[in-house]
Each structure stands twice: as C-alpha cells, then as structure tokens.
Image (tube, rainbow, N blue to C red; front, side, top):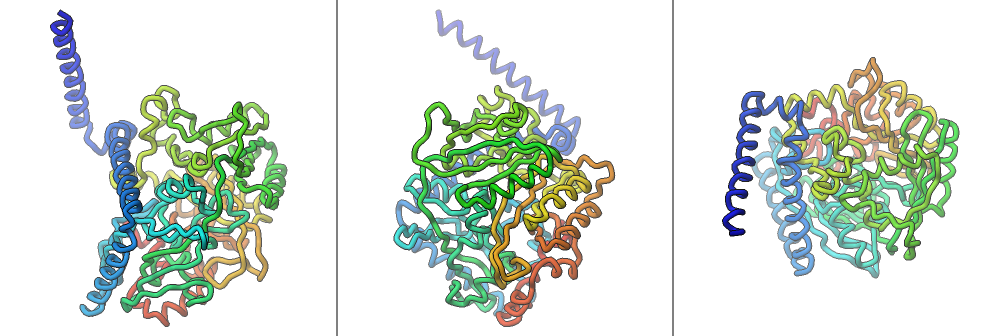
Length: 526
C-alpha cells in the first residue's frame, strides 16, 4: 500500500519539475540567452557555473593530491620542461615569425583582461600545475607555475608550514604572482610575493633552461617579477615557507574619521608584532582595521570558522563591528583566514548573486560558492564585458603609506567605490621594475577598489587615468592585471625599465616576446 501511494506522488513531482524546466527553457528562447545572462545573470551562475566550478575544484584537488603522494611530479616535471624547450626550438627553426606566449587560454586567468595576443602569437603549451617538493630543512617549497594558492595552503597548513605571503584567492597561480605580483596582510613584514621567492627556473628565447637566484644570474632574478612573461617561460619557482600555527587571533577595531583611519592603520602596519594587518574602508570616514597573530591555542567561546559555507561573507561580518561600533576578538582557523575573501571574491559576488549572503542561500548552496572567475569570464559575452568595462572598477594601486590620506581622497573623488581594501606592505630597494624612489626600505599600501563607481561623472578611461596620474606623482605603482590606460611614456615613468630593457636585448627577447606594455595595455585585448 505504501509503495503504491508513493509512486504517483513521485510521478507528479517529476512532471511538475519537468514542466518548470520546459517553461524556463521557453522563457530563455523568447528572451534570448544574452538577455538572460546580462539581466538575470544569477540564474545562469546558480544553475550552471556553480556546479561546474565544484567539478573543476574536485578534479584539480584530487589530481594534485594523487600526483604528490605518488611522488611522480618531479619526473613528469622534467619531461614537461623538455617539451617546452622542444616547442621553443621548433619556433626558432621555423623562423620565429611571431611572438611567443603561453598557450593557456586567456579566460583561465584570474585577470579580467582577455588579451587578443593569444590568437596572434605562437602558443607554447605549458601544462605545469604541480607542487614538486617541500623541503623543510631549507624551508622552501618548489612548485610549477600553474600551482595555485588553494593547493599550496591545503598541502602546507596541515603539515605545519605556510607561505609567508599567501595571496587571498584560491585560483591565483604561482606564475601569475611571480610574473605579475601578489600581496597579503602579512606583507608589511615580508613584502610582496616576489620577495619570498628564492629561485626561478625559466626557458629562454633560445630554448635553454636557466636558474636564477640573488647569487646566480642575479640580474634576471630581479627582472622577472612584473615582467608578465616577456623575458622567458617560468617552469618552476622556489618559495620560502615558515612554520604555521593552527589559529589566527584576529582583532577587529572600527574607526571613524579619515584622519583617525590613516593614523591607526599606519601605526598597526608599523607594528611588526602584528603578523597580519588589513583594513576594509566602508565609506570616506568609516573603516574596520584588523590585526592578527598566529597562535596554537584558542578560547573556545571566541572561535569563528569563517570559511564554513553557511557563514556570512567576511566583509559583511566585519561590517557588523562597524555598525555596532564595538571592537572584538575572534580565533579563526589559519586556512580559513587565508581564504577569508574567497567565497565572496572580496565583495564582487554581491553584484553577481545579489541574494548570496541570505542565510537560506548560504545553508543550501553556499558550499558551491564562489563560481570560478575563469568560468565567469568564459561565459560573460561581449555585452557584459563592455558593461563591466564602462560601469565597473577593479583596480589595485600601490602607494607610499605617507600618501594614504591623499590617495583615499583621490579615489573618493574620482570613482567613489566602497568598500576599499587596504593592505600594507614593505618595499625594499632593488633593481627591478618596482622599488622605492630612494635606497631605503619604505612602507607602502595597496588600495583595492572593486565595484560600481558612485560618481556621476565616471568615465572608465578618463577616471582611471586620473588615478594613474596621482599614483605616478607619488611614486606608486598600478597592478598590471587590471585595466591600464597609460600611454607608453607614462607607463615607463611609473616603472623602472632600465634592467628589464637591457636583459631583453641581451637575451634575445625583442623578437621572441612582446614588451610588457604591449601585453597589458588596452590595445592588447579584445
């Protein structure tokens, strides 16, 4: 009797569900796929991109774990390096008529830019995404360029180690962070990602393999960061590791008034007793400054596992301290802390899934969030790309800490995007593209603006150029993953190209790779 009653009910449910699917497909057909993706993008994201993102994550995690456990990565690595050398030598044998670039599709990168050069250059296939070795005696980890931060923290943290600077988003790759740059809330102690690297291995334009460190081929070692793959193909990097502890004791301090914000943030950044320092500015006059230290012990009633799928987005959780105007202390698991902004892609996800922080959505579907940035890029289409370009800002500007107040005021006047991400870092003197004006180490701050501008006069090119002009004038730098509107002369006023240009001449790069400006400027993309 019971089974006889359940079958019709199941059939009715299936018919009902099938009817909804048919109606949904008819609606898409009537409106058009592009209309749905533009105006109701959350439907496409929730139904298709979130499940696909989960499959991607599971595949790459299992693959990396199996390869590392079987100790096959080093052997495969040597084979892959030889294959890259073969491809470069074949390019030379054929006359080297085109510039070379990596064969990785542009949509797979975390950068919002999809360069058209991928279609016009010779694509060298580089399938290198493994962690090769963890050497706790030398305190280094050797990795391939496509290994990402999610892989590294998942492997290192459980065995008691971590990177001194572990940039936030899971999908950021070692190659992108070396050839571009990376930063984290520990950078006020350790510097940028490039400053924790101890060795690079590259295949050069003639097909040779070279290793560079501060002592061995030092010019190339200093020139590689920020070069965006225009000096050679990175095939491995050795990165410092440091002992890790289980928890981060995190202190939240709401601050009112721009003067107070800049003063307190500078003080916290100068205090090397703070392992982590970060600020989230919610308006011109209000922010929360966070400082943290690692510890092996946590007070049970103050534990907050912020990385669990049903937890509020981190930036919303932090905003709660501002609204209550009260300080607080929490103990956060180390890996949860490292990837605290991953689920909400800082705060970008609120424009993609507007109801994503709703408790019901978090409990039911939060385990699938975030959608892969690469899949968002692949499916955005020309309409969304143009809308984002004209009505959305994604920029990281690096300015001396002494100019923080003026910089925030400039951001407010030109784009008025909030929240702003504030992350301090120390910048040592050097000979590469990015270093302080003098010969002394200097404290800088990364100001990250991600969102929709609220100023009425916003125009993407003109407004960004005003920011770029301010940054150049205070001897700051613009992260090159973002939209760059500077002309060639302005670009090389911002960056020091002396060593870079000399090495391009010496290593035969001029006919093999485009200049870095040609890869990242607006004319180098769709």
